[in-house]
Length: 562
Image (cartoon, rainbow, N blue to C red; front, top):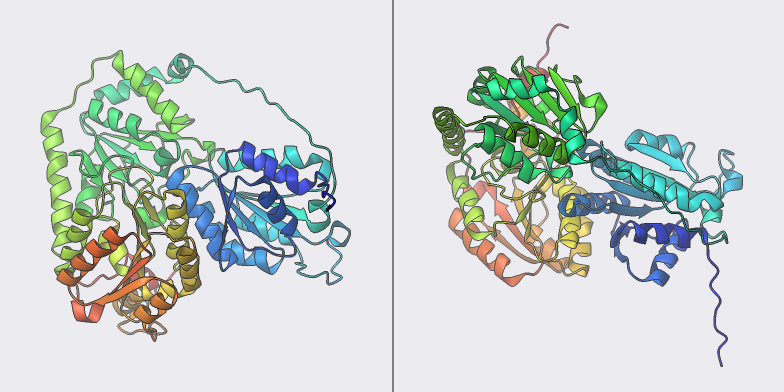
């Protein structure tokens, strides 16, 4: 009779115990000699699904996409040194987007930390590298403190402003035998009435007196699950709602008061200049969405944000309300319900006119691609998750005309880095198995993480990839042409994407017209297998108006005096 193996309780087991306690259901990563104890502990515990990516960069993007689509903590496990370095770029994206993510990485054995003796996978200063890419980086220094340290870093990742937190665990610590420790915490929660009492009466008065209010909704609305409250406030006030890229879905984009992600349009900026009150909720006011802060906001500005440092960072606020967006909006609504507030019908009509104007203006530029956006919205379910890599079609109409109706169904590259769309979409699909996930990508960026197609196939994900193939970096081509009248380093040799996809166990087809696209999208949606539609952009033809890059981009690159 085989002797039963006795499993000692180790640091790795504590890590997994804390992950389970935090509700973690999936973890992404690449197994390594510097994280094997953690992988083994996950296997033995049995409740966390492991998704094996083909690279650390992709693994982080998957955890990122999973967190954005589900609202849960994303978890990624990488190796030491080069493995951690490979993860860094994607961690920067998660930091830029404010995604709650826990990065578990190995480290060299504790006795060799900082010695430079050449221990395998050694990095000169891994903690500093991770610190530069994350919200925070922590190194475990005592195995007996594992439970408290892991719990603390999870809390840090989930505390606004949310972001990725990296935890380094030296390899000898991971297998250290320690006692199983239980930690209980007591938390005090403020009542809604006490929060309402903190809302300044002057701020409430400003809101009531405003005749042309505008709400600017950002990613903080989505993170706080505050969409219902935001919509209720907008309807109470009859306010126009502008959204950032990250804020798409904070109000249904078919709502009559939703202008949407159209701040790049001069008519929207003029509308905002003429407003008498701005209420910003969880908005970073990014440079690329404000023409590097040249957009003018009203003098009266009530800023709601969970990050104390966000107040007055980019635009001056008359009142700063610091706290969770959901709770702050609830408190504000409670205060307003005690007053007399009613929308102005003529102003709502004006909002509707602007809404139609900016959409109509954009549609006129699309040419044959108007059929693409209409086909996608007609065929795809209302709760489809649209993931957009950095590409011309995603920038021009994927981020504006494809209407988003629910929170967490719009995902884009907040930091602007190309090539992260595929693994991000995989993570979203892992987290939302029953929803349709569609990726819009360009051929140039797609090749950066193309190996992750196998991960999607291995997991049997019904992911639909729409790949716009113009054999190059289309966005940069247009900016270079507008700035210099010439192009450099932007033309690429495309592989046969259909054969490539088929070799990765995808159903794949190449199309050259809007009609073909609509037909193939219907098929992909129905079969629920990994699918790729390659759009031959030369065959489809050009847009009616070429995309010259984001507003002001070309001008910024022209030679000029300082």
